[in-house]
Length: 261
Image (cartoon, rainbow, N blue to C red; front, side):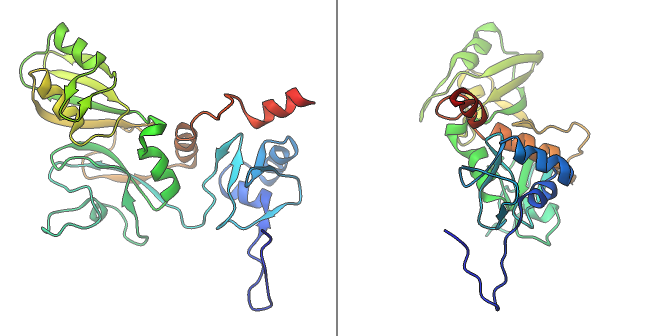
């Protein structure tokens, strides 16, 4: 629906190439080429040079991947220490993750890490991306290092890989490797409460220490516990690609257009 403007409400739309450039996709000239090549859509329709969009309302994609164009979006990667609650507020007065990052903008954690679990956590005010990173249908990978009691043998590792029966149903197959006799690397794409801890306990090796080392495409072994940093534009783009999911026909709009010509 066209945007209605009056002298008191100036037109919020700006040139599409400016929006793309501001999102970090290249110079104005490069962004104009993206548009001319038919790689950009606005609300599902192929864009053309000269289009203008409202950054707060339009859904813009490049190669079928939505871009984060809304002004004020922030993305922080935090290495959460143990003993900090993954929430924006805690009635019990315990330390919370939002107090470890800048407070100029209201943000929230993407997903949860247990109180005693350490590792990488994304905090943002981008609700759409947060939804896609946490919704089970997108199958976003989370990688952990789990220090466990005892030394898991082949049978225990095989059970973790193929699926473990828990009280809320069997787990999906996981990627599991042995780092050392008592340390496992576990990659899951589900998001159940305390899942890795419950999986390890189910095979007879309760977790002593748990650290998340990767969320989707995000990893940073140099980030010390309690430290944070802002994501780069490339990292945000990579997250958006990871959370885009396949389209219904398994190819891009550009490929479909090429077949139809």
